[in-house]
Length: 169
Length: 169
Image (cartoon, rainbow over all chains, first blue to last red; front, side, top):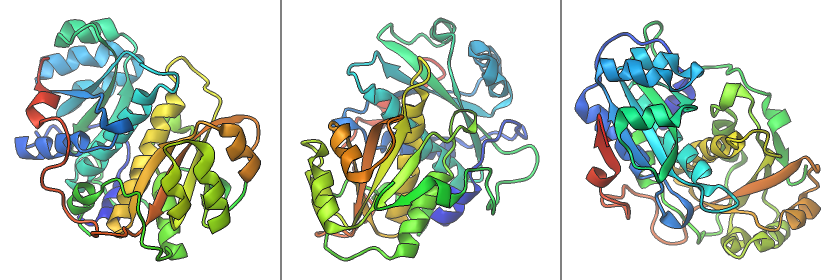
């Protein structure tokens, strides 16, 4: 798929068809995350990819907004270390990695939705990650249950001319 | 360009050829950022696109790591509001918007590099943004001075099998 089509067809998908994602496709999505840039190339992330339905069902309980994880074909748990500076740079860098994965997924016709994790201890209990990883995001993945990904002409966003300033505020 | 080529050819570019970026291309990059997802679609960002050489030279002084901004064809200043929750969600969301723009730029053969802003008051003085925007990132853009963007076979990243865990840590 052309890049612009992937960028403009990406949308949050919370309802999935049940079709599994081929391992090679999942690995390609993860590879996009691995390649993301980060502050001084510190690569703070670790990814745990979960596909077992029972575990996805449990993982969906880490936040009230994560229910869609239960029906996903796979969910990537993106883990970060304890914040190490006042800019909370890991937060920004994880946003970059997650977006790269969401675009790589869209390129394959795979929908995605990111979600925060409120109950980090439940996630830790389920997945066994170490204590020095103290926050996480989820990126759920799956083929859309309804309409396939397609270019969105008028996204639900603030108008371009309101968001973009030229040379000066 | 194919999405996978854009993702795998994106790299930090800090040295630019001097060739200007067409306004339509710049707008396409900005549009990728505008379309990025964010927490409950709150779209915390504002973008100021700077192309005036004198202003770019001044903007390069906001952080010791931002010197490359001076030679960029354009730099997008991504502004965020004061942090509004304990998760610092704006930080994550700006990471998503910046990554979408970096991939959109790579798709056009345009190099990019993100940078933090240490001296926010200098940036404010230059650009005139309001007091309730209290932190910022820069995404500098330009055609590479040296080798053009091309697929990177072995990126300088931790190995895939170290980053990715399957089902469990």
